[in-house]
Each structure stands twice: as structure tokens, then as C-alpha cells.
Amino acid sequence: MRFLVDRPVLLSVVSFACLWLCAWIGSSLLRKRLRAPTEFKADFVIILSASLTLLGLIIGFTFSMATSRYDLRKANEASEANAIGTEYVRADLLPSEDAERIRVLLKEYLQERIGFYTTASSGHAREISTRTEALQKDLWAATVAPLSSQQKPVLTLVVSGMNDVLNSQAYTQAAWINRIPTSAWLLLGMIAVLCNLMVGYNQRSSETERARFLAVLPLVVAVAFFLISDIDSPRGGVVRVTPQNLLLLSESLR
Image 1 (cartoon, helix red, strand yellow):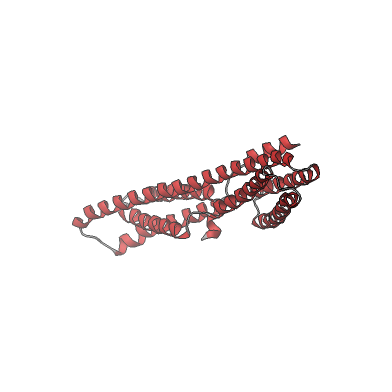
Image 2 (cartoon, rainbow, N blue to C red):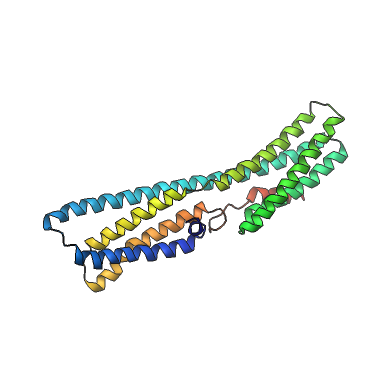
């Protein structure tokens, strides 16, 4: 399931085909084999309307979950840029050699963070994470080294700023892992399948009109699935978090 969710275009195509097939099964096979009495039709329409309403509510709820996670990823990107920029300025509080060492490392670290946001490859992202962890160790070692020779209270600002840099990356990593649960996708897909079966069963148009009519709901749901998956997927979607603040910081440090 996660394979499809990380590929919004493929998810929309597969979901449209499956849902249209369900609608056709309801229209062709179920109507031929299950002949409901007349008094059942009114109750069936009520059930169908309630199911479609539930499908719409769950789609809206899931879309809200995706957008909130997207906003969180944007906010964390801004926090990372702010933490790195602040620590770059606070490096002036250290001795010149230590300050220059931290600035060089921060510039390398900044480029790695930009690469983390811009890459679409999960393998490349893992390589970036490995290099980021190594740089974090070097940054922390370079920050605490002056404290062994100088015990000035002002140096705690530099240590605190470096701690913010490291924490901001951890918050970003957690936000990128926080996705819509697979169980929610399965529930959404199951309700969509049942709704299309019932819509097909309730369909009473001619053969020519039926082919067009049965494709409407699957198309609408497939588009909704595409939007939700696209926003929820940090790397596989069209709507992605652009590291604007990190790029602006990189330009200013040059």
C-alpha cells in the first residue's frame, strides 16, 4: 500500500480502474443476480446516500490530515533555517579559529539540508542523512572544544544554539516520517469500493449512458486520492516543501 501512496499518479490510475470495475460489477452482475423487491429500493437509496456522505467526510478528514502534515514540514524547514543562521552569527563569540571551523561546517551542513529537501530519491536521502549525522558530530565537537580551555558564560549561548540546530533536524525527520496511517488508506479504499458497487447497482440508465455515468464517481474519488497522496508524500508528489528559507540563508552566507 505504501508503494502506491508514495506514487500519486500511479495511485490515481489504479484507484480509478478498480473503482470503475466495482461500479461496472454492481451495474452488470449484481443487478442481474440480485433482484430486490420494490419496497427495498427506498431503503437502499437511503443507505447509498449515507455511504456517499460518509465517503465524502472521510476524504475531507484525510485531506485535512495531509495538509496539516504538509504545513508542519514547511514550519520545520523555516525553523531549521533560523537555527542554522542564528548559530552562524553566534560563532563570533568563540575564538577565531574555532569560529571559522564552525562556520565552514555549518555551510556544509546547510548544503546537506537543502539536498535533503530537494532530492526525490529515497536512496539519495539516506546518503544525505548519513553525511548529516557525521557533520552533526563534528559540529558538536567543534562547539564544546573551546569550553575545555575557557569557561565563559557567554559560550553557553553557542552551545545552546548548536543544540537548536541539531534538534531542528530531528523535528524535521519526525515530521517527514509522520504520514497518513496505512489503516486510514485501507478504510478509505474499502468505503470507496462499496460506494461504487452500490452506485452501479442503483444505476438505471441505458447501455450508452451507463459507460459515461459509471466513470464519474471513480474519477472524482481517484482525483481526491491523487491530491491527498500528493500532499502527504514528501518526495513522490508534485506539491513538495521547497527549502526557500534554507536557500535564502545559503545565498546570504555567500
